[in-house]
Length: 388
Image (cartoon, rainbow, N blue to C red; front, side, top):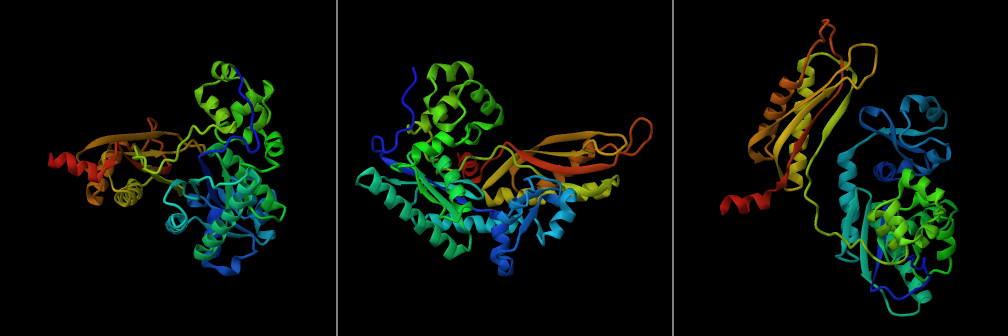
């Protein structure tokens, strides 16, 4: 049976969730270390400068889409005075850790969701829904001000009684920011809550996506509010329990608790496209060694060790020459995050995966190579096993 849809200021939730989302994070990081970029359009490119993966608002206003190939928009960006940067993931990772550390000064209950997003939760203060809304929006402004003052990174802060609603509120905060307002929203108790959910496209709801979004529109669930009102039985039969959970979250029923314990990584991929096609096995081997060394560094930083490692090469199907993708993996003698062990194993895998020419003797010109340590476990857990 269907349950009621979203209710502004419904029964008081025990706790409220916040989503803190860094605005144009990679671009903001570049501006922190070069203040002359403030107010200047900025774009950041992917590995090997292939695609545009971050855009300041000025670049978004030009209509440049996310993920667009850089070469297609190079002249347009130059004509608009856009400063373009290669990605610097070491810098972005460090700035992310600084932002998360600031959030922990407000509450210990912080879940790092991605490099530029975090959920946090606090007890719902006493008072009427309207007064709680006012208080939490002020708290959102306090968080935004402290993060900006201590790190230089602008953020949006949105509160609600569930994670999914906090995500929805973040979209509202983004709209406020575009219109010149403060990107700080508390959805619980807000008089405009119902109106916002009624006009929020279902495809923009966290966990729905494009494919489910179209199917829901066909069934009459074109907005977040309409999805919340859809019958449980229909959602289970036509979709699955995950979408039902999303609908329940939109109704104000918290189904996604805060996850503070880090999830142990099962795979880690380090790869990069070459600037030009490469046929030299020595150059490819060096690239794989570099990727393996970086993967080992990442594992150590996360307190992990790997039990297997794989290496791969691919022509990626470009050009008129012969095409091929190949890979191989092997188990490590002992689970490890040691650079020497991982590099040696990755090179052995590459030696088995690499083929220089096709059956007609035409050389393969590889476009990309990478490594992937797998079946990782935490180092402290491994130490307990070893000592047993």
